[in-house]
Structure formats: structure tokens, C-alpha cells
Image (tube, rainbow, N blue to C red):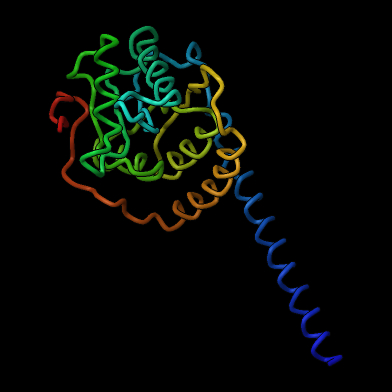
Length: 226
């Protein structure tokens, strides 16, 4: 009985130690990602209006009525301001989830931009941007982007910019935090885990769900309609 109790105690200590090590590892990876990418976050007025290949807008939820969620709408408004007023890039690249017929982030994003006066030919869609990692990977490998402006909320920018760094993309991020959003603490906790996941993804660099033929951003964005 004494040996059994000692065994249980040792097992509990080992388990607690493993949990602590895992927790510290997640925190360490979070710090690596955030600290390395923080210098690349800029305000709209501080982004050079010159030689970026595109403004990459990362997808987010779409409402049941087909309209963009608040977070997605703010990303689009920020990107459109960069395109129209700051003139930082000649093209918008909408990257999001269009993996099902009944769920389509990218066409929602394009339709919104067109309603705000952006010409359809200047809007490219990446229908297979199923994750931040895949959106960045495909921006380079499919669309040939070497210099990009990434638009999303600040909490998400750190990870997106870190992935871009690992793929040797020259990237600057612009925050789309125009309003307050519900679920901030839950998103923050999930994002810490996601940063650790994408850190490892960038070590091994697995291919995205889909690749495909190259699409030049110097052409007509309508080639990606569908």
C-alpha cells in the first residue's frame, strides 16, 4: 500500500511537471512570434505608398445573410482605405474559406469591396485560404507575392506576419481594429495556441490543402471569379 501511494504521488508530480513544461513552452512560442513581428505593424498613414504587390485581406466569419461579420467588415474597410486613399498597392487579395458551396468568405469580401468602388479587376480571390498559414503560403506560391500589406485585427497580425517572415515575404501589417468585438478573451486564448501551432508549421512547412497553377497579380482579378 505504501509503495502504491508513493507511485501515485510520483505519477502526479510527473504529470504536473509535464503540464508546467507544456505551458511554459506555449508561452515561450507566443513571445517568439509576437516579439519578432511587432516591429512590422504600422498605422495606415505610415505605410509607404510604393511597391507592394498586393494588400492581403485575411478572411473571417460571414453572417447567415451573406454579409461580412463585424471583424471582416473592418478588415475590408481598412484594406479599401489603403487601396484608395493611401495607394499602397494596385491589387487586393481576398483570402478565405470557400471550401463549401454554402459558405463563401471570398466572394462576400469581393462583393463588399466592389460596393465600395473598387474595380473588380483589381480584386483577386484565394478560395483556399483555409488558415492563416495557408493564406500566406498561397499568397507567395500561387500569386507570386513578394511584398505585401497584411490586413487583419492586431491580435491576429503577429501570427500572420511571423508566417510571412518565415516564407521570406517582405510584409507589413495594418490593424483593422475599428470597433470592439465580442469574445475578446476567448479569441486571445485561442490565438496563443494558434501561434504555437503556426510556429511549428513554419519549422516543417507542410504544403497547404491545395496548391494549383500560378496566377499573376499583374493580370485581371476576374480570372479568380468563381
